[in-house]
Length: 315
Picture 1 (tube, rainbow, N blue to C red):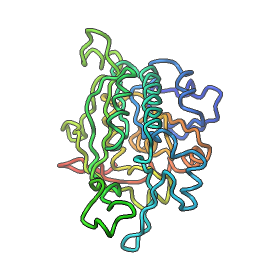
Picture 2 (picture 1 turned 30 degrees about the vertical axis):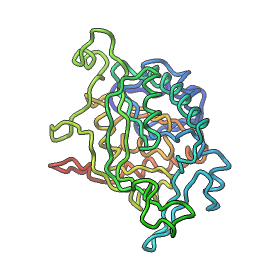
Picture 3 (picture 1 turned 90 degrees about the vertical axis):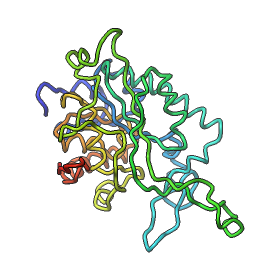
Picture 4 (picture 1 turned 135 degrees about the horizontal axis):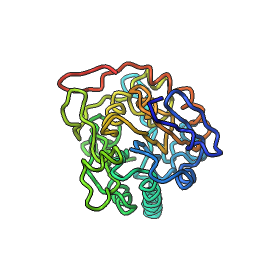
């Protein structure tokens, strides 16, 4: 455990497990975020389940049975079976408004638990980020830009549904080649400079890379490896090589606590653990909480380049 860090106050009365400098909690994040002390965390790095609809029981059942629902079941290609992806275009206008309201309410709670000047790294997608990010700003955050993860996804590029032969030269959407992460900051007290915030709260800026160059907003990435998926079978698992860059940047002085309110299989917590950083994750689904307890130490042990150009380093 990093010096001066005590995670016990975040357990409350929930089931939890501590692994090294990582605390995993089985709870609904909205309830948990209302109950913990304000100004508790130095950063939040999280990949939320948009609208949470795709993780409703009926939708997960359809995914397991290969029936689709909101989950798009891609065809096999070159002998590889591709994982299902949430079909965000299936959300109607009412569901999109509910999604906006959810992230507005969640954003207010996220502002509450962050220290002044603390950053939020929020995974998005090109289709929904336009109103999800604005809802988070309405909740009290400053928008500080986007982190673009360059990775070829399986989204878009499809011919018109049920008219593939009629319109073989048409794609309904471009093939996705990037993943946007919103970057937000809790406002600093009036009149406070970044240097003042760093001294008082250890927040306000972003940590430079290990070679001394600035953290950049475009990060080359690969798709999550089979080895990592073998450890943590979660539909939105991000690679350790990418997440370790985010958690490294999130703590400008290399000290403090990172929160992941939607921890899923615990990949963000594993990235923090691998770099010797303290973190707390919350997950409401019991099967994913159990998976995270098993996966965090295994993912943290993986040695992977952080793609730290021009001098790649292994962590």
